[in-house]
Image (cartoon, rainbow, N blue to C red; front, side, top):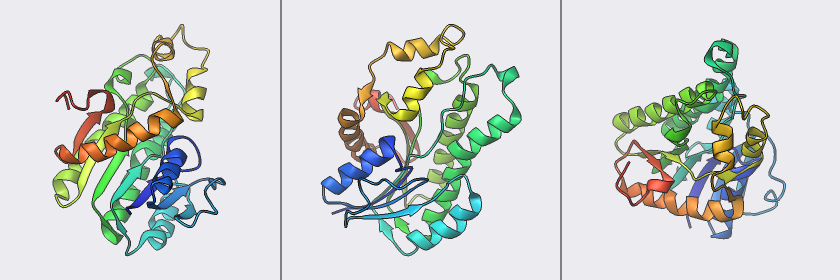
Length: 235
């Protein structure tokens, strides 16, 4: 039995990851803005409501929740898809909000894990570079590129912990579905390109994601990995 920490379990990938780990007999410590009602009664789940964008909550409340625990793996799943804008139309406030949720909240979580637990593996869910450098993806792309760099730096500073940034396959989550429903597909062709791609339902995607989480432990700590390229040697 493994002990797993997962952030962002209120819905989507995080919730199904927690369900799958519990189904396999693992114990899950989970945080999210809202209670995953389908899991709360399970004896193998400890849940704490947490808004990871609130630095004080992460620093104080998360510490109390995880202190002196030992985790086989921590999965940093929480994040946001901001609305698409050209860079000149993207306000600094919107950029700050995206960076806070997609980067700095993870830093706060990692710091808590490193300071108060024994954690063997830390994985941050990132995104494929095919989404980077594309019109309209500015805020999201910059945040994910920064997240990848953050993970690389932690790997250099903490060689006793295995760090990875992992880009999953395209997965049908409520947040991702809302992103694809944008009426800006003419202005931002990447939306239609993603719509035309293979997007896996959660039930099919998460077991494959869990296999990838195990497989990336064999790669160099700090690596950015695309699931679709695992086994091809292109990391």
